[in-house]
Length: 50
Image (tube, rainbow, N blue to C red; front, side, top):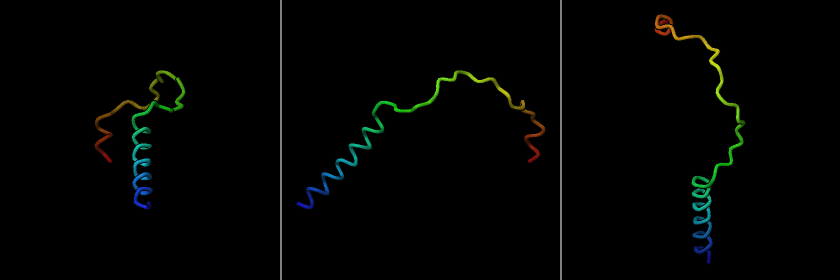
């Protein structure tokens, strides 16, 4: 009886993980589009100094 309960819980754990990995996305990211670049351009001389 205990072995069947352990096997059932292991099977449920693995199947829930597989459903989470391969299931539909539930991300709630906002649709914001492309953002303009507001940083500093790359300068080859300054990147080598640190």
